[in-house]
Length: 116
Image (tube, rainbow, N blue to C red):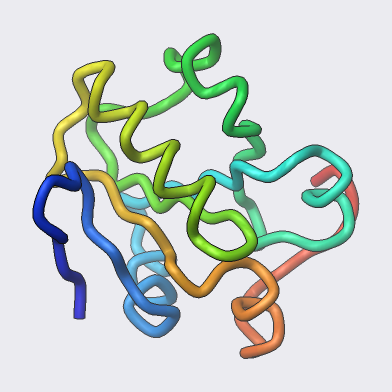
């Protein structure tokens, strides 16, 4: 179940909740890892925006959809959520998939390799 920690402008979610949200049309997954990490394996159809590029590519983040940020262990994705909130996106739409990409793939959830 999603939870918001004190002082964090986003929700933390587990793999099962992330999968449920992923299957809805009002959700976008954003992989904030480096390009080489993304190519090695990522959530299927995830948008690749490395955490260092979140601010410069802010216009690619939808303000009308749920944004599920993911990295490898939840640290960079948490930072990306913080940045998105600081740029004015609603906390109601910001989610950090805590378990990370490796866990997503190991759980057998939809994933892909390569640039797409």
